[in-house]
Image 1: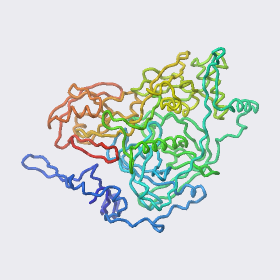
Image 2: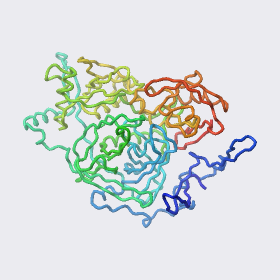
Image 3: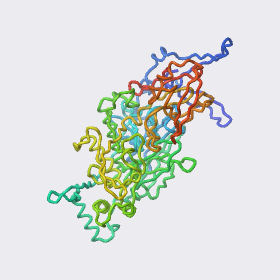
Image 4: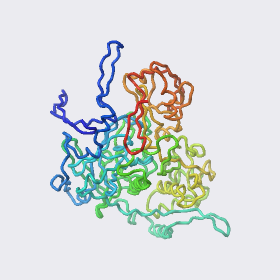
Length: 624
């Protein structure tokens, strides 16, 4: 059997009597082996049925991409072997060739995830490079197997190229030559309007502060709306008619296009309950609500304008905490967030991190540097009303500069109510966690007024990338103007580097436990530093379960030696003999410390590392 090839097997089950299934076997995740009892030792000896020397002779993934269940090459794609869904209306037809069905399978649980199998609707954004956008509830991490289905007729493998560390967006890449002739079409996005920027400047004559707007029409628009008396009488971009279009999928019967119509109600912040265990959760973005399409409807897809038939955003799935359980809700992610993620994926390709297929991870070994720079302030923000801001002591006069700017920009953009932004939660291990406090009001970044989540994010990226030639561009530092205890402060904050926060996905299997670096979600939700070795999961019957090496805890010491990362941990345990007892210092999410003793069982539970050393998506399971 070839690596990643399919074979038909007949199965029988008391619950499902379908005659056949189409399983997929992958040596790199789970090698095939046979165990025989050794009567002399009383142990079960294992033997790999496929040796590494045999694996070298196996065809590559690209070579078997167009093979049938018997391993025979399929014929070249021609016009009679595929057909796109013609759609039930003009809107469906306009995006039919841009939508694909995507399946993702994780070999090991990590990052607080509870399931291994995902599927969703992907949006093709770049045909030349083969880039497809999805949400993180379809592609939650870089490690795993990805398959894309085009036109319900052709399925090919893909690789994870980029997982956004903050927003609910992932980008995968396929090899365009495998779908040549399918007439795949890149999505057309609605033109993004630049936001009006407001800055605080000082007049030369008296050194007094005043507002300066990048758009000279801001004051004119405010004056006009005040004369009208009621801003609702003016035409707004909100409440425009849109369609939510996606692919309804079934693994056996295929896929079809489905759509519902509604109106964009508003752009607002959605506050989700803190997840347990910690896992990815959207933050610092204004999501799109569609009146007429409930957020509980279990169908992802894209938001399409009724008139222009262009993409306004991605209708994404969010896996959120609901009391003691979890549920799936749907909101729209604005087009500018989607396009920003695609631009970052292109940057990664242009900087030589990929040849024909994308790398499945960035960063890598200690000391490795990523060429893709992503920086953030290191806080989760929330909107608060002007009335609340006044109570917190932002102003003593009604015409205070900061609140005046919030009112002007809200009236100019016709987004109500006007608001300011407060620090809701600081990310652990960042400079912001030391210099800022929960409840601080963030008024400006490098004198640019923070009037939206997008404005705060853009200001940080511009000044730390050197685009504005700010003084802090070299070391990633920005000036934050905040209000705390009724007083204004200017604080220099070093931004957080998120380049490797989601794509450095090495896993260590130790004593039946899956170990990883502390996930980004645990750091920003619980404030823990990015230090130690995080326990993601354990297998039943393993030493990890027996000696209570519990998930969500961090290993910070082994036999008195600190374990700051996976490499330090492996150096402590790699020479331990089978049956050796080791002492480990454990820290919980709440900061409680305890000591445990674990007896090594290297015979049945060897230490292994799953890694992609060359960062080309070629994962290797290596025994330590």
